[in-house]
Length: 133
Image (cartoon, rainbow, N blue to C red; front, side, top):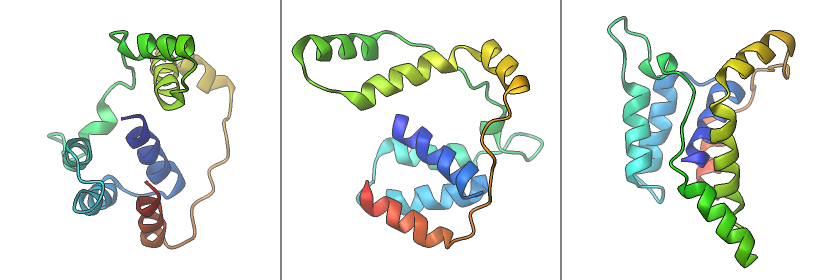
């Protein structure tokens, strides 16, 4: 799920893809090696429109809770000396996401990175990306 979130962010902010364009990419990926339930439902979620015709995904509050399984896995991996960096990063992302009020205040103070529109071939980019997953 963490990887899907990061890919979504790259497609949205980096490539400037619309939700419909992202859904098409996930549709294509789901026909190949990345065929999975998570890729399928991501496609469906990106296609889903609210009653006003706008993508529903943009109206969902960007916070996540935790049950603790990722944290427990991270702690156990440290105890055993086995790296599970992706799980650790996912736990950290969930922790940051839960700090919505702090993120909102910070966004009014910090400008963040400049957003330069992607000028390359978007289809070539997502074909390359899917071949690396």
